[in-house]
Amino acid sequence: MLGRPRHEIPETFRTAKEQVVDRFLTARRPVPRRLITAISTHPQDNVVGVGIGRKMVKGRATKRPSIRLYVIRKLDKRLIPPGNILPTHIDGIETDIIETGKFRAQVPAARKRRRPAQPGCSLGFQVPAPHDDLLMAGTFGALVARGAAHFILSNNHILANENQLPIASPILQPGMLDHGDPAMDAIARLAQFVPLSVSTANRVDCALAEVTDPNVVRARVMSKVGKLSSDQPGDAVEGMRVEKVGRGTSYTTGTVFDVSATITLDYELGDLQFVDQILIRGASGVFSADGDSGALVVGVDSGQAIGLLIGGSTDFSIANHLPDVLTELGVSLVT
Image (tube, rainbow, N blue to C red; front, side):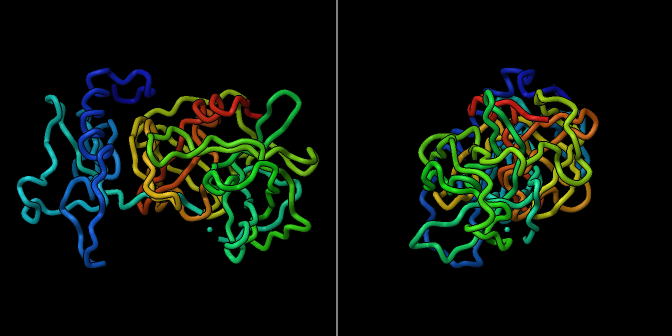
């Protein structure tokens, strides 16, 4: 199982994982009012994700496969009531409790106007009235195509304001948080998005903006990533070295930690559940932070794009599998 793509994970592990998802993530309980400094020991308040991977012992990956429970805070067992202690095994499979903090969509940090605009740079939309006093920006993920039309690929929450922005709305480079000017800096128009759902599980957070002038964009990713080796996306594998460029933290590297995580993320719409996600841990410091949402995740050794970054916590980043994104939108990478 270890070091294989998600479609090779044994069914016994998938079944065990789904048991944990149903128990701790699917039936989220209403959050009661409490002291702002208080920490809940209830597992439905603390568990924010479930995945599959090698069990970690003292910060090192062992060869023992496990069902991973990602928690906001890893607490001393002596502080937890017996009924709230997380299981050590699921259907005979070991569990591993991993502290990640609370996951959220990542959006802000200034970046410049670029012509041609290219993957890794700042972009965004003008927030409509009555909230037009708010400024935002995210990351241009990739240039993609459908027939002769070319599009900017990024997240729904970066291009479509979490389902709220009307189709054909202008997309600016840079985003307004980075001094983008609606009168001067529109380079594309919102063309399509996969709706985000609060009531059902999500697999992707993605959207397209059709490029208005092909001369104002280029496909080559900024900084050290450069030209992709293929217009075909690659498969994420646990342990794979990856890199990305985003407007928040620029160029960073990391390692794929999980390829089949079910995660709860904090959005403006509310807590959204995402299934079958890639988790990434930074090589030195964070892999992503505010402003990096929408960035393309690329395999260091293969040069193939494998994911679309959607958010993270202080320790981990979350990405959709890029093959899922491209299939949902009906587009292909431009290299």
